[in-house]
Image (cartoon, rainbow, N blue to C red; front, top):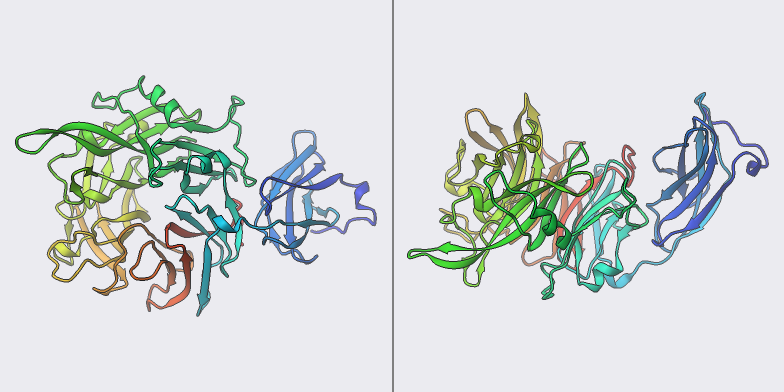
Length: 495
């Protein structure tokens, strides 16, 4: 029940709205009564229309601060807090006016949207592989609503790849300069609020982990196979877990014997590091422990012995990990066992792996894939999986490589796989790298292709049954690593 505020609302709540370091984000502060919860609604006029999430008042009542994000740049906004009292009544605060600032146009992508249907609601989170672009969130018309930038990262020619929303309302980013050709590696895992401020942990220290500090900590822990990992770069993905741990993909360069006769060779492999809530490593995995160095079907030439090139990690319903290893054209299920596992490979999905493809030959597998994403599970097993089949080095194929998004049915017990759905089906469509595919709440499938030739990065929402495009976003410059729909900038809130 919404209770109108008295004529002088300042007599009921003390509140203010101030600027933050992000010109599109306001800080709304209000003194709330005991047992209440506070949210903010905002819009271009006093009909408001867009909500934040609710934040509880401190015990006994007191100050509450909410970062209001999701506004257009260079615009005048109205906003007011809604205070839900202990009895359930909702009392509005007075109206506040806030002027958003301008975007840093030299760092912001150009987004062009066309729509021929009703897309799934939400906003689009766009990640990059290019160091002179910032990660952004846009509305479904292509307007930038939020972005993240950091001066220290920019000084090291580094960028977030990727950035992800967390259940606590913050963002986390793996930031590095691996692809900027800067000769000095720079890597940091960082948690930030919506204003871009680095969050402080329970120990009062910033929630960020630089590579040099991680490597010092890794000297004190071995993999289940007895190896010591030293990280050369952070890489491609991380996985926040419900217990507040984070699984971080890292690149590990090791000189190992290769060939016949064996020659000492610098090989680029991958490692996983399980970080606890203090960013201390508690479990470590190395590809060099469990994969065969003689299997290198992709990009294996001097001086780039890029052996594994892992690009995504997910949690499986039975407490293990799913790892996408692009340069093996395999998705691995690893024995993680909630942080007590051996790190051994439980199965391999892909060409020459442990699964049998029920409705195709060798060339119908995915190759050089990105972003395997679990869609459905049953009794602790994965039953449906989406993945981008980039198609590089596709075997048993006469035409040039082609790319597609596919959804697969899996039978883990009997090691059987079936391609259930694919888009597009064209030997002329090829995206060399990157991308993601997810199924949305309305049943449609959203697909990002990072590098389709000859056009730039493209995101489409396609109806599952008719495979018709209902929404399309063209991204320039063409370096979008991932782009996918999230409900809003606030956990549990649908825009």
